[in-house]
Amino acid sequence: MGNTDRMIRLLLAVVVAILFYTNVISGTLGIVLLVIAGVFVVTSLVSFCPLYTLIGVNTCPANK
Image 1 (cartoon, rainbow, N blue to C red):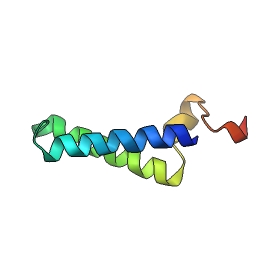
Image 2: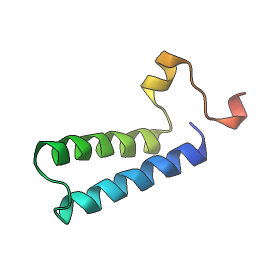
Image 3: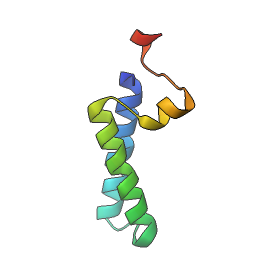
């Protein structure tokens, strides 16, 4: 996973967390988005996305 991809995932996770904790999004949708944001954070920290492996996407410029 490339650095740009990692930063976008972290930024989206932060935005979702802020929206959830300020009650802009709530209920089931808020919880689902918060879980997805958590997955984004974990995949960004380990620099690996299992879904990318399944669909054959590679965003890391060093591995091309």
